[in-house]
Image (cartoon, rainbow, N blue to C red):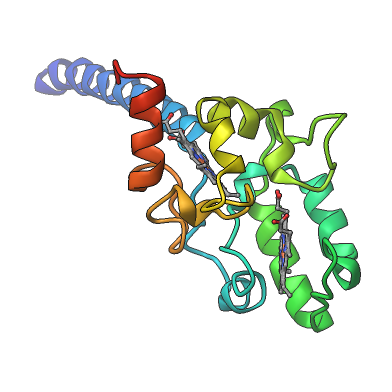
Length: 177
Ligand code: HEC
Ligand code: HEC
């Protein structure tokens, strides 16, 4: 008899638990979708040594796999420099990029821009609209100079703290912030 009472109770608890789980999962997915621009923890060390020496390690989730693949296939003429690497290392980096590449339609370069630049995607343009004039500042010089504005660009975090240069510019151009 007792069993009959506990069964429905338990299943109710399970249902509530499941609903909560679904809610939590949904929430983390939303948070994840918003927080783009983090170099993931399973990054192979070669990504730092081979792709983080001339510029910061660029977050894989800021570009779709199509353009990443093309970038990796033409490292011998990489934006004017030779960035060729050993085939094994290239494969390791390529599979890392494939695991984390972005999927959103805003993560392919604009038709008018360089198809192989994550700084030319619709997503990047949207997120950087407010600081566009700063890209011309001699202290920044290039959009790829992420560290000029993102304090933690070096370890690979792109949301969060902005540099004084960037913060002051935002305050001046948009004093309500
Ligand atoms: C020898 C130096 C060097 C190495 C090594 C190197 N890069 Fe680059 N990379 C550059 C230069 C120079 C640019 C152009 C920067 C600019 O426009 O200011 C660039 C630009 C890029 C861009 C485009 C940035 C944008 O504007 O969106 C991507 C993506 C990129 N590199 C990925 C990689 C990856 C992945 C690796 C490792 C396989 C790598 N790079 C290794 C020098 C290098
Ligand atoms: C001239 C300054 C500047 C440069 C250079 C710059 N950023 Fe940003 N970035 C910003 C500002 C300002 C924001 C918007 C912050 C906000 O809205 O609060 C931003 C936002 C972002 C975001 C969205 C983060 C979020 O909070 O949603 C990502 C991702 C990002 N930048 C990546 C990059 C990468 C990668 C580079 C280099 C290839 C780069 N940025 C270069 C100033 C810069």
